[in-house]
Structures are given as C-alpha cells and as structure tokens.
Length: 249
Length: 239
Image 1: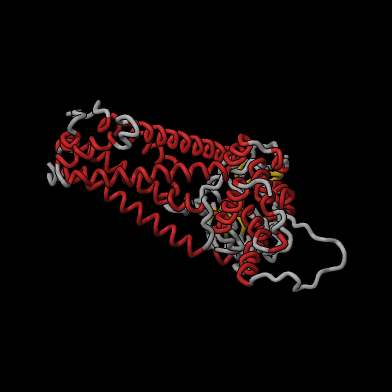
Image 2 (image 1 turned 60 degrees about the vertical axis):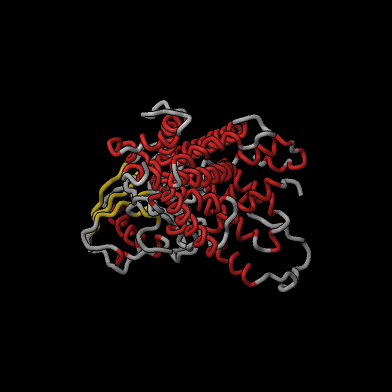
C-alpha cells in the first residue's frame, strides 16, 4: 500500500515546528505503525535527510514508551492498542495519515514526535510508593487481599504511563494516570499507611506540573491502551475528599 | 513542593485552602454548589406546575413564598436568605468553572493540527458554553418574571397574569428563548449530575451506569416540567 504521511517536524524544543508531508510506498499491511516509520527513516537516511525522531522501546505494547497522535486519536484507530502494536492493515491504500506528538504543556516536545514525560515521574515520586519493612521477606500469604480488590488493583496497575490519557483529554488532564496509581496502591493493604498523603501529594504534583483539571469528559479511557476504567477517577476523588475532610491521622 | 506534609499545623483557613486549591477541590466546589442549585430547580419547577391548578392557586403560592419562615423571621426574609445562598452558589460555581477552563486552555498551548471531535456526549462537550447561556438566561428571567421589568404586564401582585402575557402566542420568540434555555439546562444537568456524583466519589462501573441513567432521567423530567408551563400558555391550554 502507498500512503501520504503528514508528520510533525520540530528540530528542538525552541523551534516552532510544522507538519511535513512524506510519501511512503510498498507498505506491507502486516507492518506495525513504527515499522512503517522505520522504513520512512531508512529512506530519509539514505537521502541524507534527518530521520523522524519518535519514542519506542519494547514494541510489545508493555513499556509505555511509544505514543503518537494518529489522525487525531492517541495510539491510532484501534482500541486498547499501543502505537507499536497498531498494524498498517488498519489503514487503506492511498490514505493520508497525520502524525503528531502528544500535546500538553506538561509534555514539552523534545524533538519531532518525542515529548518529555518526566512530569509523570514527578507525580509518581510524590506518592507512588509504599512503606516496606526491611529484614527478611514476609511470607507470600501473610497479608490476605480479597480477590475483588486484588483484581481491581491489578487492573489499575496495568497502566504503562504512556500519556495517551493526557493527549486525548480535552483539558490536558493527567487524572486517569494519577487515579490509576492512587487506585492501584489504595486498594491494597500495603498501600494504606500513606493513603491520605498519597492522594493529596499526587494531585498537588499533578496540578503543579501544569496538567488541566478533570471534568469527567471520558475521553481518556477509550484512548488508553490498557483500558484503565474511568471509575478509578471516582476512587481518587473519594480518597481526596476523605483526606481533605480529615487531613490529620 | 509538598506543603501538605505539614499536616499537623493546619488551621481552618489552611483546610479551606487545601479543599479548594487543587483541581479536584475545585471540582468538589462545582459539585456541591451544583447540587444546591439543582435542589432549588426542583422546588421551582414543582412550584411552576401550580399554574395548571388555576390563577388563584398560583398567585397564592407566589405570595406564600414570602411568608416562609414567619413569624420566626420577618416577611420575605427567608426568600432573601435563599437568594443570598443561591447567588453565593452561582458565584462559586462560575468561579471554579472559569479557573478550570483557563487552566485547561493553558494545559495545551499548541493545538493539534488534526483533532477528532470529542467522543464524549454532546452534553459533556457543551458544558462551558451551555453554562454561559444558562447564566444569561437567568439574568433575563429575573428581569422578566421576578422584577417584571421586561414583562409586558409586570404586575408583581398577580404573577399568573405575568406568565400568561409573557408566553402569549404573538410573543413566540420569548417562548422559543425559554425552550432553548431549558434544553441547554437539560444538557448541562445530564453531564453535570453524573460529573458531580463522580466528583463526590462514585467509584464503581455499575454505579456509573446507574448515575448516567439517573442523570439523563432527571434532566428529561426537569426539562419536561419546566417546558410544560410556557408551552401550555403558548398553545392556549392555560389562559
């Protein structure tokens, strides 16, 4: 298949950047979206042009490094799929595809399609941890966890921190990410000692990073490659309410 | 950065700041003030339905509103207290909405060149402009049927006559404006009620389905109640 790509090119964070049109030919429908970009980059390199910079690592949909806005949809048209797992069979011969980086003040563009997502790291640093006693490892079943809680915590823990929720949110909010972390730790007994501080500190770090506020528009969950459910935001809100109502333990 | 760690030294002012400072806190302000305003809307809608009982009943109801709380409170005091509370709620609601809207705009300084239309409900997409329409409508509505300045009759002793004159068939444009405003309110409530419940901690998938269904049902019922009065007058069912 032959495609027209309109790709965001920006040599450095201070450049204004612009959309540049490229044509790619003989794309196999079995290629992943990133392999298609690799093919474009090989040609650009041979032609002596600067290849398009984009983030990627595992290419198995589990590391959270890749992430492109494809035709205005985070990670492209297939639901619950990362960009690396998106195959070109999702497109038609002759299609024009717009490729842009995540757009958020908290995610400044480093180069082309690469954005700096360290704002997520700062949210994690603010509260994404549990206190663990040192010494010998405890028995695996020393702390019982109800099955339903374990399942819900695991569902939230599948967040790979790719940033698609921010990219899709009309408010540029990272509340689905923050809520996934708060839910993941807050549902488990190991997460209880820091539960009140965690939600306040993580929301404070979220706001400080310059993300917008959540208005429950619901754009994030359909964009999330792991399908983190919207109700985790309700859990965060409940924890936040309780923590503000009784800030001292 | 983590000023919240100094938890033990918090004064009451600090706690209020803590509750409203974050984006989540501002959503809580919107949820709580929104619920108070919705409670008023329910009472107001039920009161409006008195118009179907008759002129005497409707006017008597309007006068009775001024006597609520008497003799403990002087005449009309309850009404003014309620107006004060509602105004405070409206101001807080708009304040939080504005701060969050400005913040959202700043959060994405470079727009997408290609942006798929927002997938969420029409109601969710139009919350901000819908809110502006409702605010403008409330100003008009107070000047029309509370103070009477924009009403063709404006007789404060006989509100039934004001309502009938207001929505007369030849003043169809007034009725149309009311219909548009009420429909905007319906959309605002459809997303607003769900969003308020979520903000106040609704946290399960089944609960989300119930909350969405209840918000839709409530918005439709409230719209129907509010629309019945002007439409009945325009269609000649109430005269």
